[in-house]
Length: 352
Image (tube, rainbow, N blue to C red):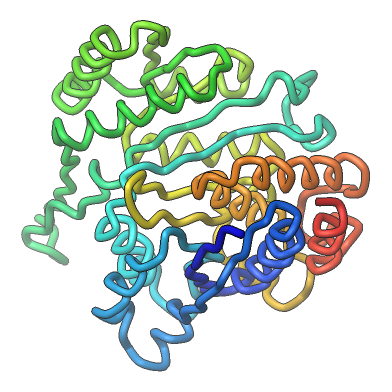
């Protein structure tokens, strides 16, 4: 029996609720695939910060490095100023654990929940590979003459050849392994961001031509990408882009796949500790009401198992989610599913 040690951060708001359901499903599936999961909880989040005035202890990152994977619920507390927890916990973990890939599958499970006319599951099935350690998120910049009429705010996008190339190589490899249309699209803004995306585009074509001749390469401006997400989502296979553009387009991707309740993501260090989460945030207004959709967290658990090499178990969990979505749920929105949070978890656990 294979055994895996998993760090669990329930976090804020509805985070602990959805993580409980993800663990319920993982524990239901694990024995069927000769897998044992050992969970270690960590209380990082808004409540701890309000109690201790410490965002993330210095011991946190070295401790988390001992685990191959982290299952995260959500970070974001209504009593904590926006940015403190997100930068102090989420971004710090992503950067210090070198989770340089944000992986976001965009997959429609049931056409009833797609806001686009006449689009079915076969039309919406693509993946966004977002660079996760550079760009505008490095925090480079600052203020001059702050709080005066002459105030200047500077926020710089940092793009290194090393960072860009390792993201591109991951995307090419992922496209090859996915083996669907074997097409990788770079989404950028070469006509305006003529330094950053000149680097991205040159590296994209150099690496692709030399090392991945079997992968078709395409390019689209990010604004055109968002247009086509809505008009022709069936055009896409794998998209690679920078940190900011990836952050924006993946939320649009979540909407066309049925909403935040079904959207899961992974923060990947291919050789280290990776973190998996529902992308919808902490949704504090729904806390402890048993109404939040846990399926994004359940799908994050499936992504985690796939990362750990337990692909058949991951596929079984996804298949169970699809069956429950298609046969049981009235909606994917909080409070409208026809079942409560715990009951949805029970349904998937019984189906897996």
